[in-house]
Image (cartoon, rainbow, N blue to C red; front, side, top):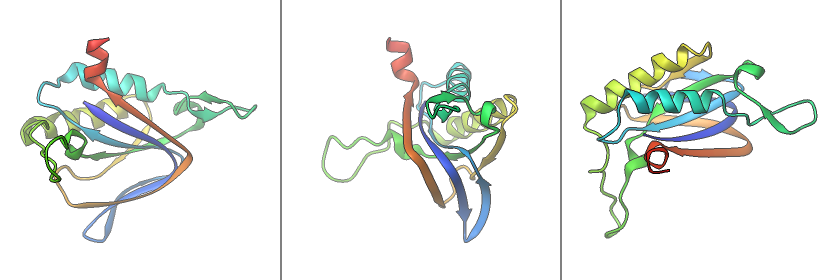
Length: 151
C-alpha cells in the first residue's frame, strides 16, 4: 500500500459539487492499494500513521501524534499512486490492485483507523473527486508498505 500523508489545518473532498467529507486539524491521507497488499499492510499503515509525531509540542517541535492534538483524518482512495511513468508520456496503472481488492482494503483501512479513536472522514472509492486542503507546514510524508517488507 502507498499513502501520501499531509498534515492539514483543513481538508475536504467533494463529489459532483457536494462535500462528502471534511476535517479540520489532522491528516489528509491519499491511499493507494497494490495487487499484493493484504490486511497486514492495512494494520501496519494505520499503526504508523496514527502514531506519526508531526504535530507541534509546546516548544514548537514536531513531537505530537494525531490523538494528542485531537486531530481527524480524511482518507481518499487514489490508485494513481501506482502510476508507472517509465515509458512514454501516458502513465500506466496496471500496478494498482484490481478494484475489488482495492475497495476491500480501502474500507478495511477506514474501519481500522476509526478503531484508533480518531474521527475518520472519507471520499468514495472509484468516484471522481475534488480534494481541497491547506497543507500545514507544509508537512508531507510518504509511506510504502513494499519498503517495509524489503527493509
